[in-house]
Image (cartoon, rainbow, N blue to C red; front, side):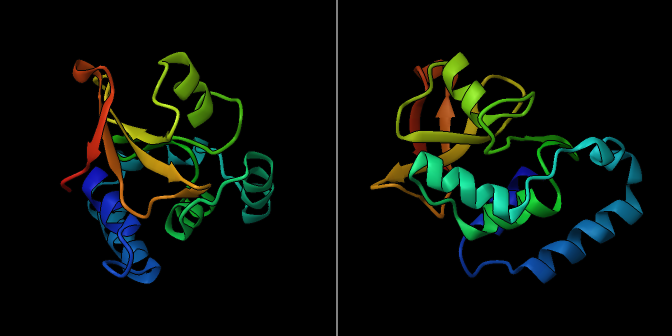
Length: 145
């Protein structure tokens, strides 16, 4: 699922319709993967726009779409973080708690202390995902998925 989410975040590689179809098919074949999805916290586009204004940054459209449709929380075998400033799935709480690099915003993890996220340059989040490795003191490198 992390690779599928990463593909959604790469511009022009996958559109929302194709992504939704893949998720629909996965839910049909393996409904237990998505058992907790109904507990996910949806963030509306309006809320995301307000967060972007407050934080003075711009999230990728693919992330905004995903978080407004599927929400933050457990998604198949992946944790997805919210752009909200607080809460169980807040990327900002994770960032602060684990002292992640200033220019890095985590949006997912692998359950082993490593994060996938965006690099922020001049207030704009990267379209591509980057990897922050806890064994390398959260050194950031481009994700290979």
